[in-house]
Length: 418
Image 1 (cartoon, rainbow, N blue to C red):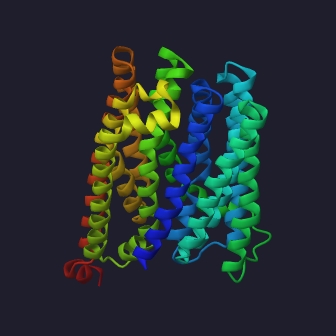
Image 2: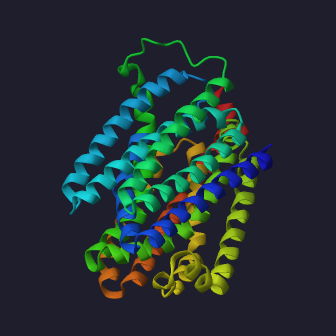
Protein backbone atom coordinates (compact mmCIF):
# COMPACT_ATOMS: atom_id res chain seq x y z
CA UNK A 1 0.00 0.00 0.00
CA UNK A 2 2.83 2.41 0.85
CA UNK A 3 4.56 1.87 -2.51
CA UNK A 4 1.25 2.41 -4.31
CA UNK A 5 0.52 5.58 -2.30
CA UNK A 6 4.04 6.90 -2.78
CA UNK A 7 3.82 6.31 -6.53
CA UNK A 8 0.61 8.32 -6.76
CA UNK A 9 2.03 11.12 -4.62
CA UNK A 10 5.24 11.24 -6.66
CA UNK A 11 3.15 11.51 -9.81
CA UNK A 12 0.92 14.25 -8.40
CA UNK A 13 3.70 16.26 -6.84
CA UNK A 14 5.90 15.75 -9.89
CA UNK A 15 3.31 17.20 -12.26
CA UNK A 16 2.62 20.00 -9.79
CA UNK A 17 6.34 20.79 -9.51
CA UNK A 18 6.82 20.84 -13.28
CA UNK A 19 3.83 23.15 -13.59
CA UNK A 20 5.23 25.56 -11.01
CA UNK A 21 8.57 25.58 -12.81
CA UNK A 22 6.65 26.25 -16.03
CA UNK A 23 5.17 29.35 -14.41
CA UNK A 24 8.64 30.82 -13.99
CA UNK A 25 9.47 29.99 -17.61
CA UNK A 26 6.20 31.57 -18.75
CA UNK A 27 6.92 34.78 -16.88
CA UNK A 28 10.50 34.90 -18.10
CA UNK A 29 9.45 34.38 -21.73
CA UNK A 30 6.24 36.41 -21.89
CA UNK A 31 7.27 39.26 -19.58
CA UNK A 32 10.86 39.35 -18.23
CA UNK A 33 13.14 38.06 -15.47
CA UNK A 34 12.02 40.97 -13.26
CA UNK A 35 8.48 39.54 -13.35
CA UNK A 36 9.89 36.26 -12.06
CA UNK A 37 11.52 38.24 -9.27
CA UNK A 38 8.25 39.97 -8.38
CA UNK A 39 6.34 36.69 -8.27
CA UNK A 40 9.09 35.10 -6.18
CA UNK A 41 9.15 38.11 -3.85
CA UNK A 42 5.38 37.74 -3.36
CA UNK A 43 5.85 34.06 -2.50
CA UNK A 44 8.68 34.95 -0.09
CA UNK A 45 6.32 37.27 1.82
CA UNK A 46 3.13 35.20 1.76
CA UNK A 47 4.34 31.59 2.02
CA UNK A 48 5.84 31.77 5.55
CA UNK A 49 2.81 33.56 7.01
CA UNK A 50 0.26 31.28 5.38
CA UNK A 51 2.25 28.24 6.48
CA UNK A 52 2.14 29.57 10.03
CA UNK A 53 -1.63 30.08 9.77
CA UNK A 54 -1.84 26.49 8.56
CA UNK A 55 -0.80 25.35 12.10
CA UNK A 56 -0.10 21.88 10.74
CA UNK A 57 -3.77 20.90 10.54
CA UNK A 58 -3.09 18.45 7.72
CA UNK A 59 -0.54 16.62 9.85
CA UNK A 60 -2.80 16.82 12.91
CA UNK A 61 -5.66 15.19 11.03
CA UNK A 62 -3.42 12.35 9.83
CA UNK A 63 -1.91 11.72 13.28
CA UNK A 64 -5.26 12.04 15.12
CA UNK A 65 -5.64 8.28 15.47
CA UNK A 66 -8.43 8.71 18.06
CA UNK A 67 -10.57 10.94 15.79
CA UNK A 68 -10.94 13.47 18.57
CA UNK A 69 -12.20 16.21 16.24
CA UNK A 70 -14.66 16.25 13.34
CA UNK A 71 -13.96 17.66 9.89
CA UNK A 72 -16.36 20.52 10.59
CA UNK A 73 -14.25 21.56 13.58
CA UNK A 74 -11.04 21.44 11.53
CA UNK A 75 -12.75 23.54 8.84
CA UNK A 76 -13.91 26.14 11.31
CA UNK A 77 -10.43 26.62 12.72
CA UNK A 78 -8.84 26.61 9.24
CA UNK A 79 -11.12 29.41 8.04
CA UNK A 80 -10.29 31.61 11.01
CA UNK A 81 -6.54 31.04 10.79
CA UNK A 82 -6.46 31.59 7.03
CA UNK A 83 -8.33 34.88 7.37
CA UNK A 84 -5.88 36.11 10.01
CA UNK A 85 -2.90 35.02 7.91
CA UNK A 86 -4.25 36.69 4.78
CA UNK A 87 -4.82 39.94 6.64
CA UNK A 88 -1.27 39.90 7.96
CA UNK A 89 0.13 39.26 4.46
CA UNK A 90 -1.74 42.24 3.05
CA UNK A 91 -0.50 44.47 5.86
CA UNK A 92 3.14 43.42 5.35
CA UNK A 93 2.83 43.82 1.57
CA UNK A 94 1.62 47.37 1.99
CA UNK A 95 4.67 48.21 4.09
CA UNK A 96 7.39 46.28 2.23
CA UNK A 97 6.36 46.57 -1.43
CA UNK A 98 7.91 49.41 -3.39
CA UNK A 99 5.27 49.68 -6.15
CA UNK A 100 1.49 49.37 -6.46
CA UNK A 101 1.92 46.54 -8.96
CA UNK A 102 3.97 44.56 -6.48
CA UNK A 103 1.38 45.12 -3.72
CA UNK A 104 -1.39 43.80 -5.98
CA UNK A 105 0.67 40.74 -6.92
CA UNK A 106 1.31 39.98 -3.24
CA UNK A 107 -2.41 40.28 -2.43
CA UNK A 108 -3.35 37.95 -5.29
CA UNK A 109 -0.74 35.37 -4.30
CA UNK A 110 -2.10 35.57 -0.74
CA UNK A 111 -5.56 34.66 -2.02
CA UNK A 112 -4.13 31.70 -3.93
CA UNK A 113 -2.36 30.54 -0.76
CA UNK A 114 -5.68 30.73 1.10
CA UNK A 115 -7.15 28.31 -1.44
CA UNK A 116 -4.13 26.06 -0.97
CA UNK A 117 -4.67 26.08 2.81
CA UNK A 118 -8.26 24.92 2.32
CA UNK A 119 -7.17 22.14 -0.04
CA UNK A 120 -4.49 21.03 2.44
CA UNK A 121 -7.22 20.35 4.99
CA UNK A 122 -9.08 18.09 2.56
CA UNK A 123 -5.82 16.35 1.66
CA UNK A 124 -5.34 15.43 5.33
CA UNK A 125 -8.71 13.69 5.48
CA UNK A 126 -8.01 11.79 2.26
CA UNK A 127 -4.47 10.79 3.26
CA UNK A 128 -5.67 9.47 6.59
CA UNK A 129 -7.82 7.01 4.65
CA UNK A 130 -4.90 6.19 2.31
CA UNK A 131 -6.74 7.79 -0.62
CA UNK A 132 -3.56 9.28 -2.03
CA UNK A 133 -4.79 8.88 -5.60
CA UNK A 134 -7.38 11.61 -5.15
CA UNK A 135 -4.79 13.91 -3.57
CA UNK A 136 -2.34 13.25 -6.39
CA UNK A 137 -4.94 13.97 -9.06
CA UNK A 138 -5.86 17.21 -7.32
CA UNK A 139 -2.22 18.32 -7.19
CA UNK A 140 -1.77 17.51 -10.87
CA UNK A 141 -4.93 19.34 -11.90
CA UNK A 142 -4.10 22.36 -9.74
CA UNK A 143 -0.60 22.57 -11.15
CA UNK A 144 -1.55 22.22 -14.82
CA UNK A 145 -4.62 24.45 -14.76
CA UNK A 146 -2.86 27.05 -12.60
CA UNK A 147 0.07 27.30 -15.01
CA UNK A 148 -2.21 27.25 -18.08
CA UNK A 149 -4.50 29.97 -16.74
CA UNK A 150 -1.54 32.16 -15.78
CA UNK A 151 -0.04 31.68 -19.25
CA UNK A 152 -3.32 32.55 -20.95
CA UNK A 153 -3.92 35.62 -18.82
CA UNK A 154 -0.38 36.87 -19.29
CA UNK A 155 -0.30 36.16 -23.02
CA UNK A 156 -3.56 37.94 -23.88
CA UNK A 157 -3.06 40.88 -21.50
CA UNK A 158 0.70 41.27 -21.64
CA UNK A 159 0.99 41.95 -17.91
CA UNK A 160 1.72 39.99 -14.74
CA UNK A 161 -1.33 41.04 -12.71
CA UNK A 162 -3.93 39.58 -15.11
CA UNK A 163 -2.00 36.32 -15.24
CA UNK A 164 -1.88 36.02 -11.45
CA UNK A 165 -5.62 36.81 -11.23
CA UNK A 166 -6.39 33.87 -13.55
CA UNK A 167 -3.97 31.69 -11.56
CA UNK A 168 -5.65 32.52 -8.25
CA UNK A 169 -9.21 32.01 -9.54
CA UNK A 170 -8.29 28.59 -10.96
CA UNK A 171 -6.95 27.43 -7.57
CA UNK A 172 -10.19 28.40 -5.81
CA UNK A 173 -12.29 26.64 -8.47
CA UNK A 174 -10.32 23.41 -7.99
CA UNK A 175 -10.52 23.69 -4.19
CA UNK A 176 -14.31 24.12 -4.18
CA UNK A 177 -15.42 21.91 -7.07
CA UNK A 178 -12.93 19.05 -6.79
CA UNK A 179 -11.17 18.85 -3.43
CA UNK A 180 -14.20 19.65 -1.28
CA UNK A 181 -16.55 17.38 -3.25
CA UNK A 182 -14.12 14.46 -3.24
CA UNK A 183 -13.68 14.79 0.52
CA UNK A 184 -17.43 14.78 1.11
CA UNK A 185 -17.79 11.61 -0.97
CA UNK A 186 -14.95 9.92 0.92
CA UNK A 187 -16.50 10.18 4.39
CA UNK A 188 -19.89 9.27 5.72
CA UNK A 189 -20.25 12.46 7.73
CA UNK A 190 -18.46 15.78 8.00
CA UNK A 191 -19.22 16.04 11.68
CA UNK A 192 -22.24 17.24 13.60
CA UNK A 193 -20.60 19.59 16.09
CA UNK A 194 -22.26 22.70 14.64
CA UNK A 195 -22.06 24.70 17.85
CA UNK A 196 -18.40 24.11 18.66
CA UNK A 197 -16.82 27.21 20.17
CA UNK A 198 -13.39 28.42 19.17
CA UNK A 199 -12.33 27.93 22.78
CA UNK A 200 -12.99 24.20 22.38
CA UNK A 201 -10.52 24.12 19.48
CA UNK A 202 -7.62 25.67 21.38
CA UNK A 203 -5.96 22.27 21.98
CA UNK A 204 -5.61 22.03 18.18
CA UNK A 205 -4.01 25.46 18.12
CA UNK A 206 -1.58 24.60 20.91
CA UNK A 207 -0.64 21.30 19.25
CA UNK A 208 -0.36 22.78 15.76
CA UNK A 209 1.38 26.06 16.53
CA UNK A 210 4.83 24.42 16.75
CA UNK A 211 4.17 22.78 13.36
CA UNK A 212 3.13 26.13 11.90
CA UNK A 213 6.16 27.90 13.34
CA UNK A 214 8.42 25.14 12.06
CA UNK A 215 6.94 25.43 8.55
CA UNK A 216 7.38 29.21 8.70
CA UNK A 217 11.02 28.85 9.71
CA UNK A 218 11.69 26.26 6.99
CA UNK A 219 10.32 28.66 4.40
CA UNK A 220 12.28 31.54 5.88
CA UNK A 221 15.47 29.55 5.38
CA UNK A 222 14.85 29.75 1.63
CA UNK A 223 13.48 33.27 1.73
CA UNK A 224 16.22 34.97 3.76
CA UNK A 225 18.91 34.67 1.03
CA UNK A 226 16.48 36.16 -1.50
CA UNK A 227 15.89 39.18 0.69
CA UNK A 228 19.62 39.84 0.91
CA UNK A 229 20.02 39.28 -2.84
CA UNK A 230 17.29 41.82 -3.49
CA UNK A 231 19.01 44.38 -1.33
CA UNK A 232 22.29 43.86 -3.17
CA UNK A 233 21.21 43.36 -6.80
CA UNK A 234 17.44 43.90 -7.13
CA UNK A 235 14.52 41.94 -8.64
CA UNK A 236 16.54 40.70 -11.62
CA UNK A 237 18.99 38.84 -9.38
CA UNK A 238 16.13 37.47 -7.29
CA UNK A 239 14.58 36.17 -10.51
CA UNK A 240 17.77 34.35 -11.55
CA UNK A 241 18.29 32.81 -8.12
CA UNK A 242 14.61 31.87 -7.74
CA UNK A 243 14.58 30.00 -11.05
CA UNK A 244 17.58 27.89 -10.00
CA UNK A 245 16.28 27.33 -6.47
CA UNK A 246 12.82 26.35 -7.66
CA UNK A 247 14.16 23.72 -10.04
CA UNK A 248 16.00 22.13 -7.11
CA UNK A 249 12.90 22.49 -4.94
CA UNK A 250 11.05 20.44 -7.54
CA UNK A 251 12.94 17.52 -6.05
CA UNK A 252 11.76 18.60 -2.60
CA UNK A 253 8.17 18.27 -3.74
CA UNK A 254 8.85 14.69 -4.75
CA UNK A 255 10.53 14.12 -1.38
CA UNK A 256 7.48 15.61 0.30
CA UNK A 257 5.25 13.20 -1.59
CA UNK A 258 7.27 10.32 -0.17
CA UNK A 259 7.07 11.80 3.31
CA UNK A 260 3.32 12.33 3.00
CA UNK A 261 2.86 8.74 1.85
CA UNK A 262 4.78 7.20 4.75
CA UNK A 263 3.58 9.61 7.46
CA UNK A 264 0.39 7.68 8.37
CA UNK A 265 2.36 4.42 8.57
CA UNK A 266 5.14 5.99 10.64
CA UNK A 267 2.55 7.42 13.03
CA UNK A 268 1.04 3.98 13.61
CA UNK A 269 4.46 2.33 13.99
CA UNK A 270 5.62 4.89 16.53
CA UNK A 271 2.38 4.76 18.50
CA UNK A 272 2.81 0.96 18.68
CA UNK A 273 6.47 1.40 19.78
CA UNK A 274 7.59 -0.60 16.72
CA UNK A 275 10.90 1.26 16.43
CA UNK A 276 12.55 -1.34 14.18
CA UNK A 277 9.86 -1.02 11.52
CA UNK A 278 9.87 2.76 11.94
CA UNK A 279 13.63 2.93 11.40
CA UNK A 280 13.56 0.50 8.46
CA UNK A 281 10.92 2.54 6.64
CA UNK A 282 12.80 5.78 7.26
CA UNK A 283 16.07 4.32 5.97
CA UNK A 284 14.41 3.02 2.79
CA UNK A 285 12.91 6.44 2.11
CA UNK A 286 16.32 8.05 2.77
CA UNK A 287 17.91 5.88 0.09
CA UNK A 288 15.31 7.10 -2.40
CA UNK A 289 16.19 10.68 -1.43
CA UNK A 290 19.91 10.13 -2.00
CA UNK A 291 19.29 8.49 -5.37
CA UNK A 292 17.18 11.44 -6.49
CA UNK A 293 19.92 13.88 -5.46
CA UNK A 294 22.57 11.97 -7.40
CA UNK A 295 20.43 11.79 -10.53
CA UNK A 296 19.63 15.50 -10.29
CA UNK A 297 23.30 16.45 -9.95
CA UNK A 298 24.35 14.30 -12.93
CA UNK A 299 21.54 15.60 -15.14
CA UNK A 300 22.33 19.19 -14.18
CA UNK A 301 26.04 18.78 -14.91
CA UNK A 302 25.39 17.57 -18.47
CA UNK A 303 22.16 19.32 -19.47
CA UNK A 304 21.74 22.50 -17.37
CA UNK A 305 22.96 24.87 -20.11
CA UNK A 306 20.66 23.39 -22.75
CA UNK A 307 17.61 23.16 -20.47
CA UNK A 308 17.89 26.70 -19.11
CA UNK A 309 18.45 28.12 -22.58
CA UNK A 310 15.40 26.31 -23.91
CA UNK A 311 13.08 27.09 -20.99
CA UNK A 312 14.19 30.51 -19.78
CA UNK A 313 16.51 32.03 -22.39
CA UNK A 314 20.18 32.92 -22.62
CA UNK A 315 19.97 35.49 -19.84
CA UNK A 316 19.30 32.70 -17.34
CA UNK A 317 21.46 29.98 -18.93
CA UNK A 318 24.58 32.07 -18.28
CA UNK A 319 24.21 31.06 -14.63
CA UNK A 320 23.84 27.31 -15.28
CA UNK A 321 26.75 26.53 -12.95
CA UNK A 322 24.60 27.70 -10.03
CA UNK A 323 22.02 25.00 -10.79
CA UNK A 324 24.67 22.26 -10.73
CA UNK A 325 26.04 23.65 -7.48
CA UNK A 326 22.58 23.68 -5.89
CA UNK A 327 21.90 20.08 -6.92
CA UNK A 328 25.27 19.04 -5.51
CA UNK A 329 24.25 20.23 -2.04
CA UNK A 330 20.63 19.04 -2.38
CA UNK A 331 21.06 15.79 -0.34
CA UNK A 332 21.28 17.87 2.83
CA UNK A 333 18.06 19.72 1.99
CA UNK A 334 16.18 16.63 0.82
CA UNK A 335 17.10 14.48 3.82
CA UNK A 336 16.11 17.32 6.14
CA UNK A 337 12.66 17.45 4.54
CA UNK A 338 12.19 13.70 4.91
CA UNK A 339 13.35 13.58 8.52
CA UNK A 340 10.96 16.42 9.30
CA UNK A 341 8.07 14.13 8.39
CA UNK A 342 9.53 11.34 10.51
CA UNK A 343 9.72 13.65 13.53
CA UNK A 344 6.17 14.90 12.91
CA UNK A 345 4.96 11.31 13.22
CA UNK A 346 6.44 11.20 16.73
CA UNK A 347 4.58 14.44 17.64
CA UNK A 348 7.78 16.09 18.92
CA UNK A 349 6.62 19.37 17.45
CA UNK A 350 8.48 21.61 19.88
CA UNK A 351 11.74 20.02 18.79
CA UNK A 352 10.95 20.91 15.18
CA UNK A 353 10.63 24.57 16.15
CA UNK A 354 13.93 24.55 18.03
CA UNK A 355 15.81 22.99 15.14
CA UNK A 356 14.35 25.33 12.54
CA UNK A 357 14.97 28.38 14.73
CA UNK A 358 18.64 27.43 14.87
CA UNK A 359 18.66 26.93 11.08
CA UNK A 360 17.03 30.34 10.50
CA UNK A 361 19.63 32.04 12.66
CA UNK A 362 22.34 30.27 10.68
CA UNK A 363 20.74 31.35 7.39
CA UNK A 364 20.53 34.96 8.56
CA UNK A 365 24.12 35.10 9.77
CA UNK A 366 25.51 33.32 6.70
CA UNK A 367 23.51 35.49 4.28
CA UNK A 368 24.62 38.65 6.04
CA UNK A 369 28.28 37.70 5.67
CA UNK A 370 28.49 35.71 2.42
CA UNK A 371 26.02 37.31 -0.01
CA UNK A 372 27.61 40.81 -0.01
CA UNK A 373 31.00 39.16 -0.64
CA UNK A 374 30.14 36.40 -3.13
CA UNK A 375 26.72 37.26 -4.55
CA UNK A 376 24.61 34.32 -5.75
CA UNK A 377 27.31 31.80 -4.84
CA UNK A 378 27.24 33.24 -1.34
CA UNK A 379 23.48 32.60 -1.26
CA UNK A 380 24.08 28.95 -2.19
CA UNK A 381 26.65 28.63 0.59
CA UNK A 382 24.28 30.25 3.10
CA UNK A 383 21.57 27.76 2.11
CA UNK A 384 23.96 24.85 2.62
CA UNK A 385 24.90 26.08 6.09
CA UNK A 386 21.27 26.52 7.15
CA UNK A 387 20.22 23.12 5.80
CA UNK A 388 23.20 21.44 7.48
CA UNK A 389 22.19 22.89 10.84
CA UNK A 390 18.62 21.70 10.30
CA UNK A 391 19.62 18.19 9.24
CA UNK A 392 21.93 17.78 12.25
CA UNK A 393 19.15 18.84 14.60
CA UNK A 394 16.66 16.49 12.94
CA UNK A 395 18.99 13.52 13.27
CA UNK A 396 19.59 14.19 16.97
CA UNK A 397 15.86 14.66 17.63
CA UNK A 398 14.92 11.50 15.76
CA UNK A 399 17.52 9.41 17.62
CA UNK A 400 16.25 10.71 20.96
CA UNK A 401 12.64 9.95 19.97
CA UNK A 402 13.46 6.37 19.02
CA UNK A 403 15.51 5.84 22.18
CA UNK A 404 12.62 7.11 24.26
CA UNK A 405 10.15 4.81 22.49
CA UNK A 406 12.48 1.82 22.84
CA UNK A 407 12.98 2.39 26.55
CA UNK A 408 9.24 2.61 27.15
CA UNK A 409 8.81 -0.64 25.24
CA UNK A 410 11.49 -2.50 27.18
CA UNK A 411 10.61 -5.24 29.68
CA UNK A 412 12.22 -3.24 32.48
CA UNK A 413 10.01 -0.26 31.75
CA UNK A 414 6.91 -2.42 31.57
CA UNK A 415 7.77 -3.98 34.94
CA UNK A 416 8.26 -0.53 36.48
CA UNK A 417 4.94 0.62 35.06
CA UNK A 418 3.22 -2.24 36.88
